[in-house]
Amino acid sequence: MEDSNASANADIHALCDPARRVVLRGGLAAASALLAPLAACVSTPPTRLLGFTGVAVSRADAVLVPPGYVAEPIYAWGDAIGAPGLAPGLPAFRADGGNSAAEQALQAGMHHDGMHFFALEGAPPSERGLLVVNHEYTDEGLLHTDGAAAWSAEKVAKSQAAHGVSVVEVQRDAEGRWAVLRPSRYARRITATTPMRLQGPSAGHALVRTALDPSGTQIRGTFNNCAHGVTPWGTYLTCEENFVGYFHGPAEPDAHARRWGLRPQGNGYRWHEHDERFDATRHPNEFNRHGWVVEIDPFDPASTPIKRTALGRAAHEGAFVMQAIDGRAVVYMGEDARFEYIYKFVSRDAVRPGGFAANRELLDHGTLYVARFDADGSGQWLALTAGQGGLDAAAGFASQGELLVKSRQASDRLGATKMDRPEWIAGDASTATLYCSLTGNSSRGQAGQPGVDAANPRADNSMGHVIRWTESGGLAGTRFAWSHFVLAGDPANERAEARGNANGAEFASPDGLWLDPRGVLWIQTDVSPSAMHRGEHARLGNNMLVAADPRSGELRRFLTGPVGCEITGVVTTPDMKTLFVNIQHPGENPGQRNDPANPTRHSSWPQGLAPGGRPRSATVAIRRLDRGVIGS
Image (cartoon, rainbow, N blue to C red; front, side, top):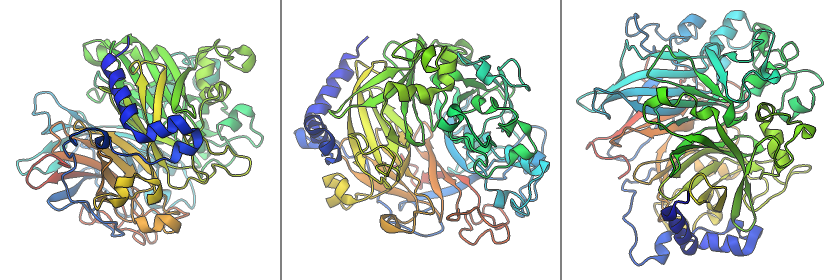
C-alpha cells in the first residue's frame, strides 16, 4: 500500500532540493552538485536542531566534547561483565595481557563497535537498561603477554573469546553517572565459539553442511561483528563483516572462493592452526556459514542466537530495521567492501504484538533486494529471487538457499550498483528517507577497476560520502529517488552553507550513522591510521563525531576521539540525556598491530579507568552537566 504522506513529502523534497534537481537533469556531471538547505525554498526557516558549541579539530589523546558536557568511560576491554555468581570485579583485567581465555570469556571483548541501549521493564526507561555491544576484532599484540609472535591453542581460544558481543546491565545514579551493574542475571558474552542456529532458506543446504555439522543448521560462533540493528520486537541484530579473512584458504581457490576473497594466508589470524574449522582446505563449506545477520534476545541469557539466512550473506556492516505502513519489517544493509552493494529485505509477514516469542520466524521469510542507482537520480530495488531475472540453475542459483550463500554473485548478475564501501544506514520512517555512509574507495577508477558513476562520482575516493534516497510508495516499494547528502573531505565538495558556516565541520571517511528521535543525523568517522597523517586527511586530526541537521544542512563537530581510534556505536537513552559512544582501537599503529613491549607508544587512553598502560577500546557515556537533552 502506498504511503501518500511519504510520497507527498518526497515530492516536496525533490522540488526544494537543488542538488536533486541538478542530478535529475544532468546525470553523472551533476552527481557532485552541492546540496542547498531545504530552508532556501520555504518562507520560514526550520527551528535549529543543533544547540551546542562545536569542538575544534584535535590530535589530543583524549575524548573532547563541547563545553557543558562530560564524557566518562564505563565499559572497557577486559572489564568484568558481571557474570552471575562472581564477585563484582572478577575476573579482573590484567594490564600485562595475562588474562586466560576462560577469563576473557567473562570480560568485555576487544574493539567495541555497534551498540544499542535496551530499557529494562520495572525501571524508569532512561535510568537502567542493557547495553549490547559488538566486539569487532582483536589486536593480538595487546591481547597476549608476548603478542602474536607464536600462536597456541590457548591464544586462539583467547582471541576467539575476545570477539563477538557483550550484554551488560547499566544504571544511572542520582548524580547522572553511569556504571555497569555487577553481578547481573542478564550479563552475557557471545563469542566465536557460542552455539548458534542457522535458519531460513540456506539452512541445511549442501553449501553449509560440514563434517562437523552434517545437518547444516548448527553453527559455533560469530566474529568480526561490526554494526548492528534493533528489531521492533526487541531483539538485537549483530552483523558479521570481514569474516573471510579468518579462514586459511586453498592455494588455488575456485570461482566462488575468489569472489569472496578467500586466500591462503587470510588476514593474519592463525586460528586454523588450532581450530580446524578455519582451515578451508579441510572444511571448504565452513566459511559459507559466516557472513550472516545474527539475531540475539538480550533479555534471555540462555537463548540461542540465530543466523538469519533470508537476509543474505555479505560482509555485513549493519542491519537497520523499520516498519512499512502495512506492518512488515524492512531491513536495510550495507556491505562494507569496495565495489559491493546496498541491500533491503522486506518480510513476508507483518510484525505481530507479543515480542520475540510472536516473531521468531519473521526474518526467515521475505524478499531480499539489491539497489541500482541510476544516473537520472532514480533507483530501483532488484529482487534476489531464484528463478527470476536470470538467477536460475544455469547461472549457478538452483535454489534460494544457494542464491543467498552467493548473494554477491547474484547481485553481479542483476547489474546492481557497485558502491564505495557502503556502511551504516539510518532513516526516517515518516518520510521513507534513508541515509547510507560510504567510507571511500581508493580503487575507484584505477586500472582494471570500475570507473566513476553517478552515485560514486569520485575516482580514488579517499574521503567518502553520504548518499540518501526517498522510497517511492513507502518503505516496501521497489523504486526510489536519490541524491548526495554530502561529499566528505574537500570543502569544495561540501554544501555551500557548510563552507561559509562557522559551525560547519569538515570530516572524512563517514562510517557510523544514527538518526536520533529529534531528527539529528549523527555521523561517525573512521579515517584509517595509515591515512590520518598524509594529504588532505592530515588537517582533519583525529576521528570525530559530527552532528548534522538534514533540514538546514548545518554540520557541527560534537566530539573528537583519542589518537588512532575510530568513533562508532552511537545511541542515546530514550530521554536523550545520555549519549553512548564507542571508542575503538585507540592508539592503533599505522601499518602494524600494537607492540606489547611498548603498548602506550601511540596512546594511553583511557587514563584512570583501570591500572595498566595498554590502550583499551571502551564505551563512553556522555551527558550534559545541566542534565539537558544531548545536542540541543
